[in-house]
Amino acid sequence: MRVVLQRVSSASVTVEEQTVGAIRQTGLLALVGITHSDGPGQVQKLAEKTANLRLLEGQQSVLDVGAPVLAVSQFTLYGDAKKGRRPSWSQAAPRPVSQPLFHAYVQALRDMGLTVETGTFGAQMQVELTNDGPVTLILDSDHL
Image (cartoon, rainbow, N blue to C red; front, side, top):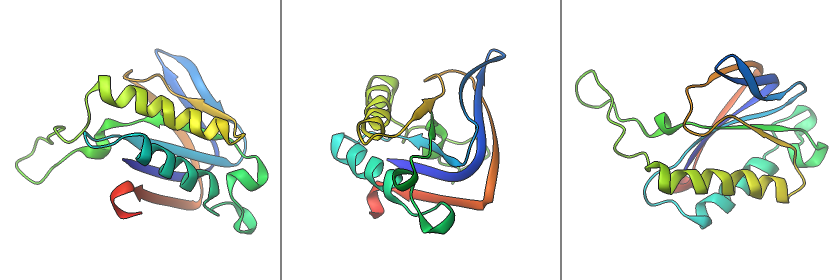
């Protein structure tokens, strides 16, 4: 499982010209990719890391200050561009595997008391953000 975390001062997701998720204050945008071998263990580990990383002002976490998270599924985090000019998406888990794990990640964050907005799983989305810092960090469950 991979999560790209960006500290944002605001972020939103639009689907078919409708805003489906937004945060209008400092928080985190979490772009979430899931691969075939992921399961509940990876979900819990990355949710806890997301909630507790001290990426906000004053070295605080979103859990420390109750800041919101906007979580967006992004299978392209498992794209492979080693060969040719067309990326391969074969390392990304298919929807029947990835959708429940994405929702479990969101629920794990909510279970910790965080406010979590989301995009629409599998939709063509436009993500707008103001990266604060800029601060961007890549979490990979294989390296935690």
